Amino acid sequence: MIAGLGMPSAATAAPGTAVLATDDAPAAESESAVTVGVATRPAGEDGRPDGRSRFTFAADPGQTVTDRVLVGNTGTARQDFTVYATDAFNDDAGELSLLPTDATPTSVGSWIRFDDGSDRVTFGLEPQEVRLLTFTVAVPADATPGDHVGGVVASVLESGAQVTVDRRVATSVFARVAGDLQPQLSLTSYEASYQGDWWNPFSGHVQLHYTVSNPGNVALAANLTSGTRTWLGIPATGEQGGKVPVVLPGNSASYESTVDGVGQWLYLNPFTTLSPFVESPDASMQVVVTPITRDAVAFAVPWTVLILGVLAALAVLFSRWRRRRDEVRAREWMDFVAETAAADAAALAGTRADGS
Image (cartoon, rainbow, N blue to C red; front, side, top):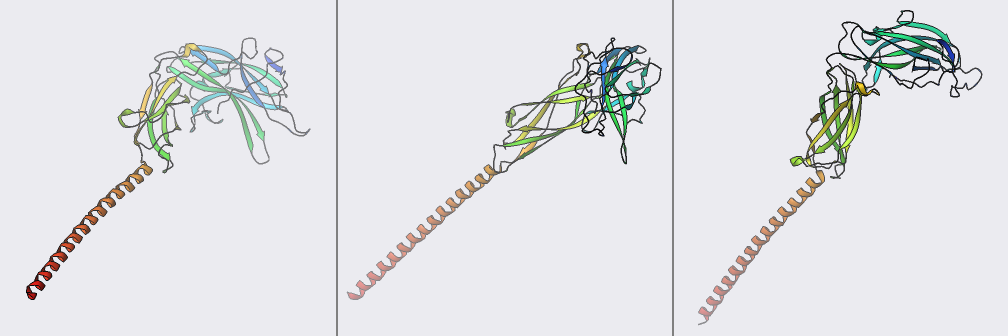
């Protein structure tokens, strides 16, 4: 992940090296403990940190831009630094990451050269020492329009008992080449599923799975709004907000989010609206991007209501069956009484006839 780590201001501001004026340096736990610390920060023409968190350029094809970076040793021992530039991409989690150290950059990372004309410089720094490096970004004449993103990396190799660890800290570089800008994000997949306790029809949530792709040529972040509708477009819950980190041109990233407080309305229509924007402190880099919306269909069976309905239906059926059975028995009893009365009357009539 690209991290623009903070670094205290330098006590002097001259090319070469300077001593950090700081009380925040990592302290050794004992005399033998060694802490590795690496820091980078953009610098102004005076060689001091100028408050920027990243390098942002807007240039024409064929143009060259000059800038400066401070590299500092915030550890407790002398360290050998290698500083170079490389390209960035979105990793599986959607975060901005850098190419591996041994990978060759093909975008903005290949455009950067340091004072001596090389693509990397190596030097040693004592604890709390800083070096100011000047570099140029030479935009190729055939560079494609849009945003090209990378980082200026400071690397320290830390040798362990069995492995060597490459400690890297980078300040990101956003270079926009003039031309036909095509800012665009798309939701290339969008799936929704309902989750909740079967016995509580009023408390559940919709789990959203979606992939955000950048088919354009401008690096874009996005605010997102998600919600759920049900029958006739009636809202099933309030809308909930969130944010998608910067997605670089040609990259994509998958995310998950949750819409809470969704009842079991059987039919659910979850939706998400992405409102892309350029995440930059430079207002001149902003562009207008049309929001996009995707929706899906999910089902939330109201089991409690269904069970109660089935029980009620069974109760009605049982009541009707019992009423019909009672009616049959009543008719049978009345028929029996009538037959008995008729038989008794016939017997009585026969007895009287014999007696006369």
